[in-house]
Length: 292
Length: 318
Image 1 (tube, rainbow over the protein chains, first blue to last red):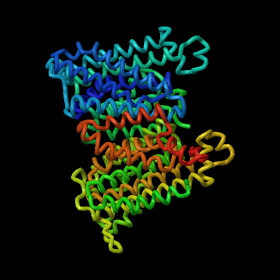
Image 2 (image 1 turned 30 degrees about the horizontal axis):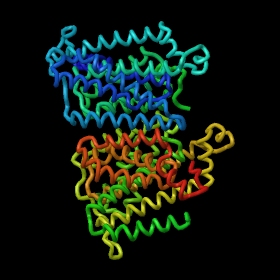
Image 3 (image 1 turned 135 degrees about the vertical axis):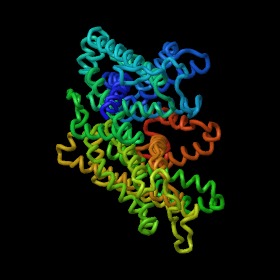
Image 4 (image 1 turned 180 degrees about the vertical axis):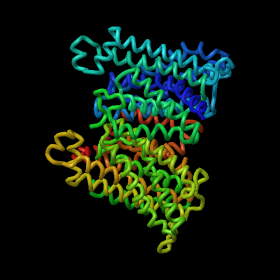
């Protein structure tokens, strides 16, 4: 019983690693543009399918596919930004519907090119089991990308706090007009936040391809999950998002272990609604209240 | 000109269409399905235009409405026509559960409703005693024969769904012209100022949500009795959300008839053209339409057409 719980928590923490990569990207873009990019999960999906195509067509190791995925996902993110920045009226409603439509386009493009089948990496190295502390099992890919993800997010965290561009992103998030007066170029900063989000999404996509299974509707699932996590954590900080992501990961894997795999999504959804209604600014406070 | 437009359109819809296509069950079935989407699109647009709320979870109300009516008619023998209203009522009651979400802003409301849709779908799958679970409900009672008209036929179904859509659009138009409509329009411009002068904005939004859910529920109930089969993945399918949104945006969600025209155009194009051209992922085109409309004409097609037909009455905003 105890070992089962520990194993569930361990798997949940590992899953939280890539959930966090997706959620941090969503939060970054929301910070600079005040827009929820509903096509964000589809960027993750795209990266995963690029890795799949590279592996199945050219026998390329998924890790070697990262540069290609970066270029394609980065270009897609830039396109999403270019289209979003053309909206001038009813920005809130129209940007939601625009990114919703872009998500449908990406999902169906994947569906048209690669059909609805479920895929995962064929490289055995990623899927060999790794034993931690004698009793906890994981796939090597899960461990590798959890550690890699932490390093990447630590890098983004440092960039946000210590570089001029990173501070510009934070400045734009906290007060747009003041940031402009201080010489921040809003367009350049917005597109930068989109590209960093694309970088994180690419790694998350490769992580999912090597450690889980991919299928076309995954993008939508990831968008919703990332959104739930940012609601849990508040949009404020990377460590907060990481904790929120690990919580969702653990709740899901505990539900799968003790209740039923079909209720996995339900647990996250219910937690989402409870937090929205009880603590609208997220578990870790933050000033950016999301409800009136 | 405008005075004769609506009666003429109604005459065509009620008389000419059944005469022209009544002998062709395939075409009639397509038109009924398009109007089903149109009914949800009107409900979605009502909430979006009057209430200022984007919902990504109207499938929740559609599913609840269809299951309410199907279960009541199968277990308690409620006649299907009464089941339509009860289905709507069920969805309206379900919408009360979603009302705490009203205090959330744009994207948070949209995704909270999406979460409800998922939760309702899972509940429908798990409550096997009532809903038959994932296996679904078979042979749901069909509509009766009334005054010599077989309402269970394709043409009969057409008359029912057409009436539902017309009544919904009429209710929408009436609210828009009423004092409520004025208050909702003011809320759209500036909510805080509207509240300050004493408009109960949350109550109004709640009323719009309940009405939108009611209409969607009635349409869902109609669909259940029309196709006589239900299962959770179908009744709560994301398609019941995506298609109506695409229809409403395409036709123009700030007008009354835009969503219906949009639904007829989009659904028929999708089924007759795009599905033939690309068997996989034909929703791709719907995404393109959504993106294209938002970028080129966020008001949809109806304002463009309406400008020619309606003359001065162009200000369709709530």
